[in-house]
Image 1 (cartoon, rainbow, N blue to C red):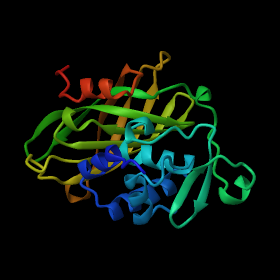
Image 2: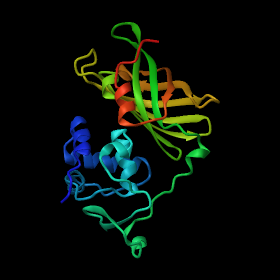
Image 3: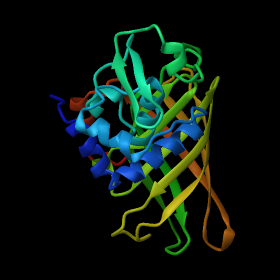
Image 4: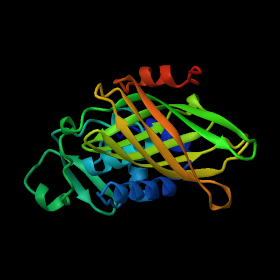
Length: 254
């Protein structure tokens, strides 16, 4: 008898996504990372029901990008060294046979080793500054974020208890340069009333690999282009549930 994946369902519902919404987000993440997938509502249902004990690596990466959590915290069994079988419509189940693997698994992009870019996975403290034209005052936004790394790609998602807004970063590592995009869903009860802002970000990694600092760019009112400083400071490499619970709090002012 299959054991329902209550962890994945709790994460999805906590993100206020339907199964359809979640599947579309997985597809979008696949296109952004250069690994298109065929996620659909049926596949999400099979994951949550426990009919599929572990997803293909293709979906592992998409799940981590969308949720901002390591696969170990999403209620799945390890897929390391396992083969998969199934179909593109409903996903893939674990199989002990390797005979037809080449026909069943579509080719995927193999990321370069993480060591070539440094190792950045773990919990980081994010802090950026911005000027509010409506209030004519400068402010700082702070979050604890979980960084997931696949080769030269980093995905960061804020822990929900660290701020009333939700922050995400999708960036690429090129030596000591970090370049990508950011999205922030502001607090529905705050000054910006749940508005969604997005833009670009570029950071330089210090030689220690434990601090990134640079600038963000984004649009403001009347098509103005705004910018400001942004830094991320490493806190801990672990992404265990106990660690994330510990950082799921509002950062102290610095």
